[in-house]
Image (cartoon, rainbow, N blue to C red; front, side, top):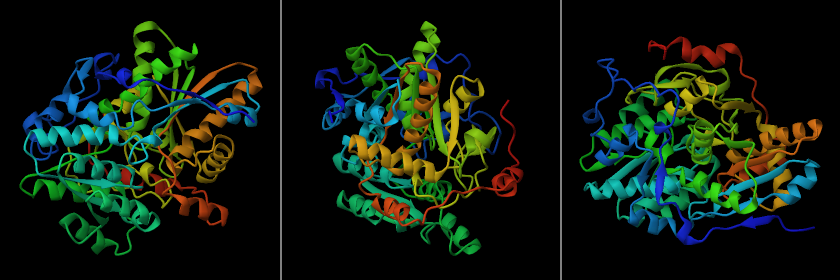
Length: 455
């Protein structure tokens, strides 16, 4: 048995800039709308919860935005992250495909999320903010922001989706260790949470509900802003350090990906690894297939509708042009908590609408089977979210074997699963199941929407 090949970059090769795909998209995304006026959102509409520098990045069309030295210096704790060729996994699958993965589990929080958490904490600190609120599903984003806030001496309050709060207690301890306060959502701390609990005292929660609570707390508390871990343009922008590093690392191997795969919740890790490569499609005529993989129990990309919708359950956010299942949709309580979100980021939604990227939905059991195969060959036990990408990698590797074609596949290993062992325990105990949603379950929230179609 031989070790899989590890490709490293030096600290000096850490990207100097974020890559902004808005500069190169064939069709620009539609503007977010103010739900009160139904007019495009103005910068001043967002200043109650975001610092001005992040608002500027949200609407920027500049191709590159410089990474502040203070942010790069903290990145150096774990970046550049390694790229591996999964040789043993290839052997198990008996495929002619070359399989590479970018390993983001080396960060302090164990996932890709600190790439934007550090940046957001910095920009808020520079504008005199004293604390941040946020939501988290599986806990990876909450962990990342807790760590980032500690680096800049900011208070941090995290609303964690109830089902994940119960399933993943050590993520909560991790956040507490970095000084954050963690509250199970829905909670009695906000009007939003209380309203949900009145309707359903046993609500498992959702990312949409937790976002509502965090936004409400930020908007009503002096000196406190809100930070989001996915969906918004500036968040996706910060993650492009992943793909930029991967381009340099693959140059060292002489390979270039035919297919890039990443799990999909709101879009952060998918955007992070694919956007810098999509530039080659737009500018040089390459044809890299980029596949976003979502849970079959929350299939907004594959079965949702492209229209304006709120990013949160209670309707506090602007109306975002997105693929959505409706902002009141509550997904089944799967272990991939970071993927239990009703909508998709506006940029990713526009790219999918224009058929410039692809989407796939995978059931929970297939994902865990894939994750175990990967762990047994490559040694890394991945987060439940990442198993979705691996399941799709297996599908593509099998296609390559049937077709007899040598493909190069790259996927984003967005986080390790060492705080998710209860999920694997439930799998081995036979407690996990696939979720087949009826049309009524899937589309009931969409039917209630009064928001306009995105055309």
